[in-house]
Figure (cartoon, rainbow, N blue to C red):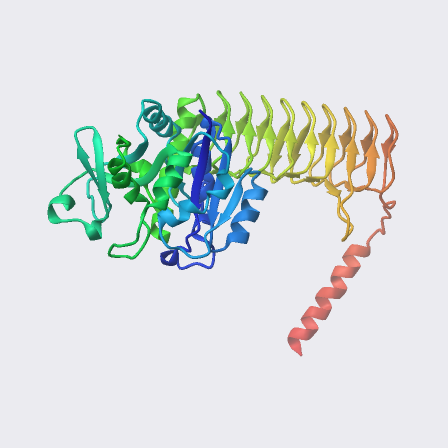
Amino acid sequence: MPTALIVLAAGKGTRMESDLPKVLHEVGQAPLYAHAVASARDLEPERIVLIVGHGADAVQASAGALGIEATFALQAEQLGTAHAVAQARASLDGFDGDAIVLYGDTPFIRPETLERMLAARAAGHAVVVLGFQPDDPARYGRLVMDGDRLARIVEFKDATEAERAIGLCNSGVVAADAQTLFNLVDAVGNDNASGEYYLTDIVQIANARGLTATVVTCDPSETMGIDTRAKLVEAEAVFQARARAEALDNGVTMLAPETVFFAQDTHVGRDVVVEQNIVFGPGVTVETGARIRAFSHLEGCHVSSGAVIGPYARLRPGAEIGNDARIGNFVEVKASEIGEGAKVNHLSYIGDATVGERSNIGAGTVTCNYDGVFKHRTTIGRGVFIGSDTMLVAPVTIGDDAMTASGSVITEDVPVGGLALGRARQVNKPGLARKLFDRLRAEKDAKKKG
């Protein structure tokens, strides 16, 4: 059965005290709504509909930047969750399958949980609601059961004392046949304490029509909603704890796990060693057997098997590090390919460049890639030795097995096997340093006496 996602992402998030739409606040260096979408990735949804409202343009731009293939439905007025779902109707026109309603501020629903909800749908239940039993039910809506049948959902403010005593609570996540869902939503009214159109009312309407509704439960941690800065901090801690545990389970060695920070899409292979104080930004893949040394920052990069990164290294977007390559302390690599077995060990910047296999880049080397308007590329061949403190002024090509002398400024291509020197001839002036210092010290003494 095809699946569609309806992700509610229209809220402003007043309690966040922010100009940023609530769903664009980040956990694991990804916006909250992206976690909700990712939770259903294993279901291979045929369609994804994001219901946008406050900051709609920013949410759409974010989804585009992340490569999320979705359609967008505008909820110009926030009149309740049923009203929000109704906005997806046009986007799901002609769709024949199940729809799952998710919330852009609830990032931790597990794929396995959604699969169990769809299994309940396949078993014949028209509406499946995700429930949970928190230690403190607080002001959550309550799920009123009649055996295995979900009789109705009651919002806290509308509940009786007996209903408030129920421990089974509503997460808001719903699965139903898409067309059935819209038909039920059409019948929802707003005669309640808030004057809103509650999605929860579809359960009672379904029962009245002879359709069955049931509940699938999950751990309360999955249903954490983010509506304050404090909750955002709490969610980040939950995310990092999960990511670290998963990495350990997958065969990653972390010397101090509590100091390692992952992004939502970080992939680290087995037998990778991750030392202390590492930050993985978005878009990082580290292959089997690599080592990430202490105090390094990686984003948008690929580290191949056996490579060693750091300590104190920075890999920026577009960095491709080959097998067994070495990127050392205080080295920055951006939009560059570092070949197999190549070494950039000390205090260098490699940007918009290709470094061939087995080449060695000396300390203090800079690929001068930017002329103030355009970026230019540096190409370094195989087996090249770049002397310390070499400035490679792009565009420039260094041929295979070539060498540059230390302290050179290289502005022209270097042929295969050639040695390039781009520095002024040294001139020594015997005794001049002593004379110069004597004069300067005399001037200093004179100023003190004056």
